[in-house]
Length: 233
Image (tube, rainbow, N blue to C red; front, top):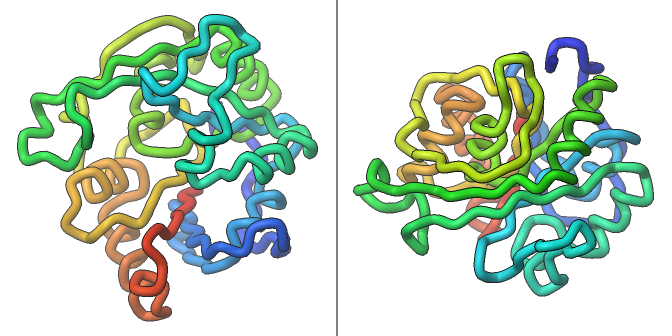
């Protein structure tokens, strides 16, 4: 499914709608680029899809028309205005709902005992299946959503709606093949954090994770900003 999709460009034009710093990493070539977050407008095209996670209890979507509030969106890397900018270009914005047994998932030494309970709405599965069938890219924000989509995808690459449970212990320091996801947007956590090392390494490989930290430190990005988004492609 992923192999048939058009190769992502490594040098998009910068877009002034979001001036935050973005670190872009190509998992295949190992190339690392530091650019503006707004350049994601050029990374994503008509028909591509972004999957965001909604923490259960903050917002539920009992009907297809329900969407997270702007107050929730401001806590993600995507501001509401920026999502509208992407939607105007034809990028699909869809959601999954999840709940972790601990308030800070993946950060505890006992992370193997944690469970993430999730819901994939019908409209989300339908939108992703349509994008995948046409060869478009699927981007997820956050490691929990990455694992949720992988769990909700069958061997043939079809996304299924419904409920399920993900065990974070499935994270591995060795790279895994995520057939359900093409691109991952996450935050540059401290080098010793469990979620970034295990979750990030399983998607991009440990060597690239180390290089991302070195690049951010060498350019002064890691010290200057509390939250630095990293895009793995």
